[in-house]
Length: 385
Image (cartoon, rainbow, N blue to C red; front, side, top):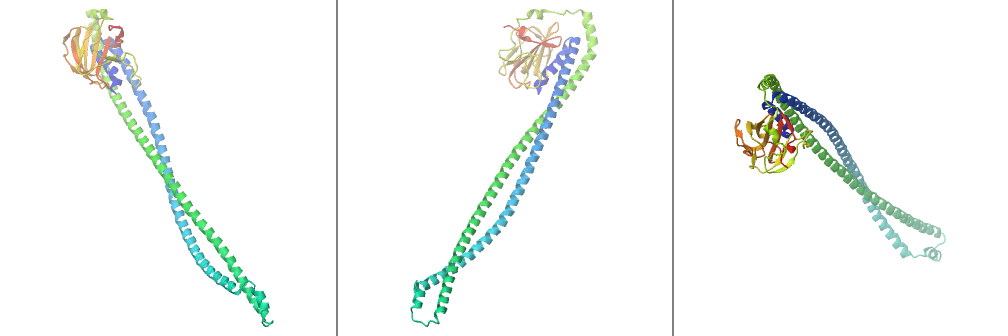
């Protein structure tokens, strides 16, 4: 967040110690840039609100689906109870059939034994037995009746066996269906519960991001208000400052301008960000250079001048500004320590600070700017190659 306001706040600060006309113009530009950033974040917040609403709808869908899955599971439970009752009935009927089969088997055994004892040619034996011919019809009737009864028992037995097999098949099918229904219902509920957890986590993440963006917006708006108040004070200083500059006849160029292309690097370090390159966040660009270096490494003035600011500033950390005359200034930020106070004279190459990480820029090193009349410009053409 601090990265986004470094250029804006730095411009306002430098305007206080630069010629008033250039400061007012630069400050107005920074205000416009800051307001654009506020609008961009407001747009992001609106988009995040839409994402949260969409995630809330998806979570509601998951919860409705879970409710439906639980209702279905309860329904399956009721079906299971009904089917268990059916199974109990089927098992009871099968037990009765088993008893009937046992009785039929016993009767069949008796009939078979009687048939065996009487012999297979019983009708012929009766005819040749010498019995009274008047008794033969009655005996034949009894014998036929016994055979018919035996056949009925055999037919009933076959039917009972078939019914028993059918009942056993129905029982097995009911058991398998119950198991399949329960497995499916529980799997569906588990999947929906997992989906709900994922969507709830996504909603929490969006809510955290939205909260962070709102805090960022609030900080931006506070910075805008501070910068606006600073701009108002600068505007009040413009007229007397301009009049003083006109009466003193100060030159518009000086010795510092002759150093173009010959300035040394302010620190030994790795160049990480160039002037004008895109920042990682938002639409702002770098207004200077960032040179990565270890904490404590010496930061040296690129030219002679006078310290006009040496203090902590939001977005810059421990910041030191050297006035080189004729509207030129050099800025050294993100320092671990400032070695000089305001008003101190500085020689070219003199150690003025120690590199650090106080500017909340995410890495250790030095943030360096060159400005003229309060406006930042690219230092690349001014430094030794």
